Length: 114
Image (tube, rainbow, N blue to C red; front, side, top):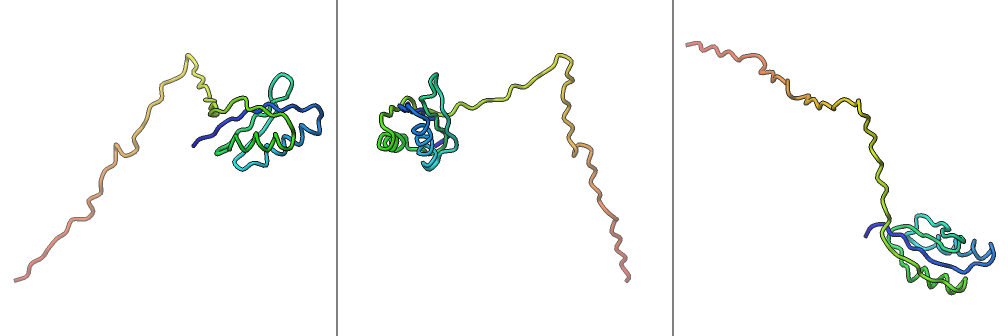
C-alpha cells in the first residue's frame, strides 16, 4: 500500500475547533502531514501511509461535529523536470575496465636434476 491523500470537510466556526480538528487528524497512526485546504480553509488534507479514512471521519464527528469525507486517493508524485539547453554536449560513458590488462605474473621455471 502506497501513500494516500484524504480530504475531509469539517465545519469549524472558530479557531479553537479548527486547532482541535488538526490535532485529531495528526494523532492518527500513519499520518505524515496535515494541512487546511479549500477556499474557506474548511477542509483538512491528510497524507500518509496506511491511514484509515473511516477512523479519521468517525473521530472528527465525535469530537468536532459535522464532518464529510470528500476524497480518498493516491498522492500525486511530482517529477522534477530536466532542463536541457540547446548547446549541451552529449554525455560520453567511459568504461574503466575496457583497457584493463591482466598481469600474468612471473613465469615458472622447473629444473630437473637427474
